[in-house]
Image (cartoon, rainbow, N blue to C red; front, side, top):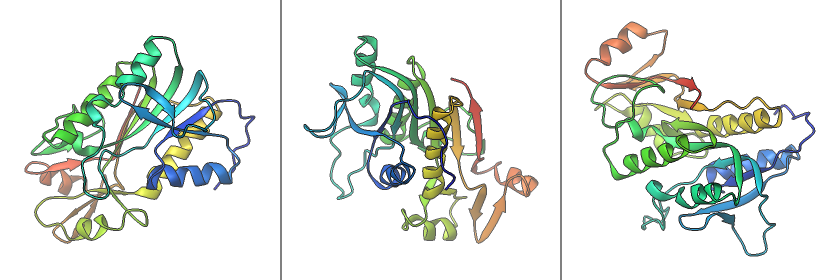
Length: 247
């Protein structure tokens, strides 16, 4: 991993210490990059995880949000996506804290309402499930806030951190499937940190896949297999690795 050669002054706060957030923290520690851990409360907003944790700064240069509303044990989560940023927005509106930039790990569930077509980062959201609708609401809250926001809409996560999905990805026959290695998401988050440290952060939306489409034993790559993929898109939803810049 290339070290960051910058005089660090920006304050970086991370919400989420699971597989994605924990891996990012490992990289930051290896690079001697300072950060603070926090949690999001629907009512209170951004707050410390533990009572004895260091106080959060008033001015936050980058807030990394990589949390999951799914309970690993199968139980019901204590929060929902549709209102998780309510407290944070209230804090900002009241002048209690300032957040310059934010990156949120989201999901391509926001596109689940499409039956067919080529879906890119610029495509309108079209959710069906409660989780998808909640993600759309969460994204909208951030996009409409004063925060410069980058949203990473990840397709199915696989790899060492998420070993369950890869067999499904490779054997899908009912519909085209898409995925992105969780390590690539962690790398993207670390790049965001470096961009903030070097004042190169850009808001926008990224639809993250590994560039491949998996269907009935075939592995198609965009844009190499563009014609074949476009034909499939007439009857199936196809996710295209892509990005937009700006809010």
